[in-house]
Image 1: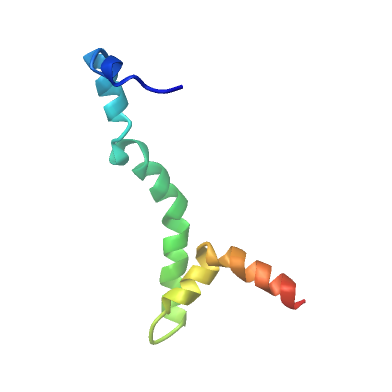
Image 2: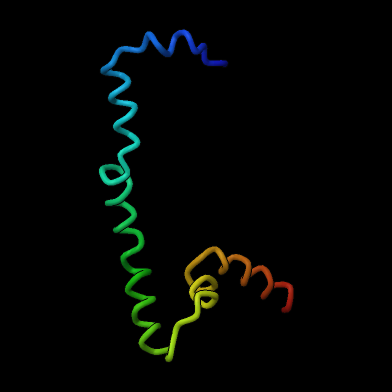
Length: 79
């Protein structure tokens, strides 16, 4: 289905405001992101105290980021 640009100008302002409200990151996304990543941030802080002088970003990527999937795949190839 293709959107007719002429009809966009006829949308009620209330509907436009509701749609625009969903772009409010702090209202809709931030609370969930804070909850999801709180434990990750705590883990990184703990690991940075253990691994001195600095915790390298590549290690964080492998352990907490999408790098873990790549690590598992490569590990399966090696075994």
